[in-house]
Image (cartoon, rainbow, N blue to C red):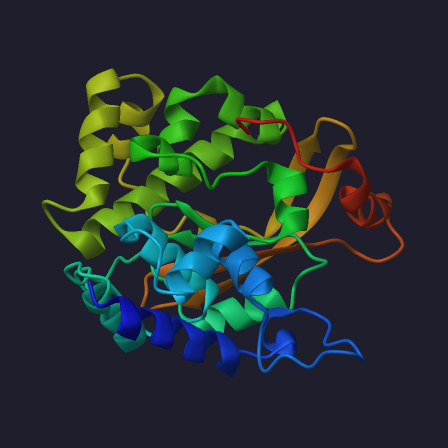
Length: 281
């Protein structure tokens, strides 16, 4: 670990980011070049003290998960991310098709959607980033680990995961998730994360086994983009889900909107008031 180089690299990347790049107001009295340390720390999902100590060359060696969070928060490119890992004394993450690194372009899009429910998903439906309104709508998915990170896996193993949609929609979502998993499996091939999920779900039997055997492809693409969400405080929301694909990263950005003037549109405006949705959703 090269403390001096790590500190200098983080400082220069922080100073290169402008508040408007990450969806923050500049303010008339701002004198700091780029972002403040507390702003960078918040984007990286860590305390200001922890981040500041690293920039001051007196912190502990960051773990790989903390470095990944810094790479996302500071909008680093893949080359910059790899440099960050090496400078911190770690091997660089493998550049496979499926990666947990969110590109700077996608991060900029998400930062400009601060008042809209939106999230970044991997091809296994693992949540990498959520806007605050999305956390309020669907719950915070950032702390999940292992197979439970995948919404596909949770759909077939955790009854609570289905509470986000009306029961009448469950059959379609099950087909769509099985189809999504088959597409990821064909892209990743044997030995990938998709195969691990498939094997785990097949071992449990039940609904997934029948859906997997049906070999349905592209179920979600045949939908109309409409999603009905059951919120514990707001009730039923009839939403449109727009999807932006990042093929290089095998990731998708999901943006939830409602038709202006409808009851669901009014409910979306209330998300900031009701706060985070119930845990485990």
